[in-house]
Length: 298
Image (cartoon, rainbow, N blue to C red; front, side, top):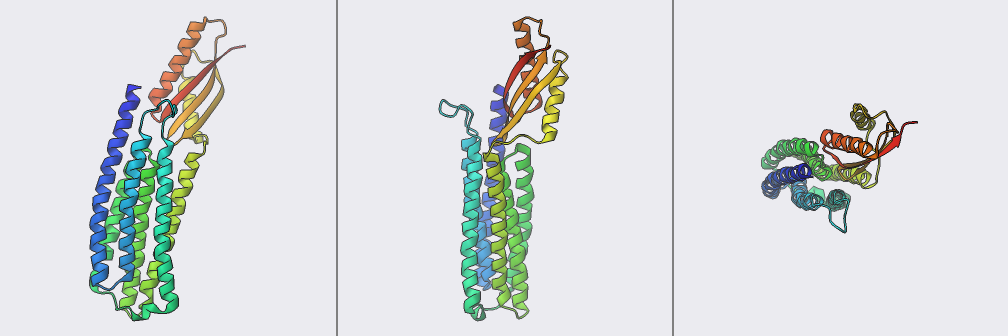
């Protein structure tokens, strides 16, 4: 139990560190891109700046979700709070989609009404801002993804993809700005519309992954085979009658029925079950709960 508490504290520490770094980065990018979009007359860059602002909110949602999900089990929640991290990821996906929808609706109306014809050609500052945004957001994506995989955080991974969607939207903004400077002002608006599709795709992927974790499903075959190998290496275990696993947020629950010598005393069978339990817990940090049932050999 003490080891699991230490792991949870480390999990929370890493998630908070990553979140603070990305919040500071996104705030700087938001201000820079907004100013660049206004000064250089680029609607695509202003849309991209709004996207960066939504990143700040989404990261705050991640911090709250991770903090709540790391709480220890209590009387009302005996199995813990891990699924609340998935709830945070779902909220993030919805916010991301609404942000993109607002951008898309405004730009679509601008294209239909021909409003883009009255827009000034974007200045060189908008180009510089787009390039800086692409590099910065891609770096944030890899940074966040690395730690999301390290601690297996669905909310942090959702935030990583949010960064990637921002990088892709900045690429769209860059193409639109370049095209507008070459005499195609409509491309600045088209780029903003493409940004919406990137945002919508990212929000769908985040939502789908979070929902999959909300619904109990078994671990992958590789993990289950590793669990079997861990148990069967115990010389007192004669076989395995049943192995069932289910994911709960980013944690794993295991139910296993092992076969032991039917002639041994009950306390010895109990000791075998305890050893199996401890072996799994030591070898698989993500396993939160293990139920071991002993069947007598025939």
